[in-house]
Amino acid sequence: MTERIVKSDAEWRAELDAETYRVTRQAGTERPFSHPGFPKGPGHYECVCCGARLFDADAKFESHCGWPSFSGPSSSNQAGRIDEYHDASHGMIRTEVRCHRCDAHLGHVFPDGPPPSGLRYCINGVALRFVPEPG
Image (cartoon, rainbow, N blue to C red; front, side, top):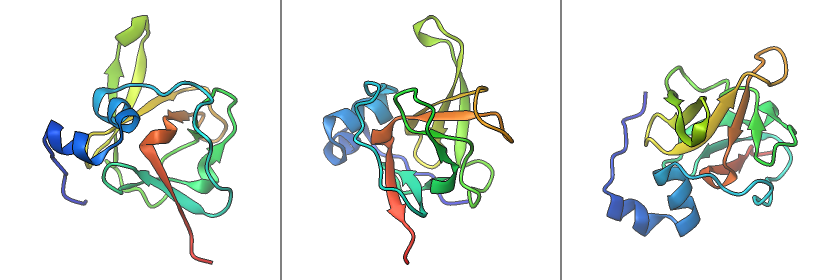
């Protein structure tokens, strides 16, 4: 497992644009359908804050919820790269997902995804960076 990254609030503010900071460091949510999308094709998605590999492109699906959705973490994602937390904010009970390496807020996971996992990782687009596979 890669070493955890811990930075001060001032360091994160200096490295991230205002919206990415608000979402990833303050557990914000980008507006639905506000992310311009990602390229199609083979690749993976990594944490915009630390570069940890989080999701594979083939796990991405269209859920029509307004945010990028994935059926599960990256197949090369060893256990523990995505942490889950009980979230009772905003009058809802949800499961928050965060990057294990840097504690960036990614989004939430819901039990209404496609088979075989039945999960929908609903992730803020600004929390991810797409990395195409060399081809």
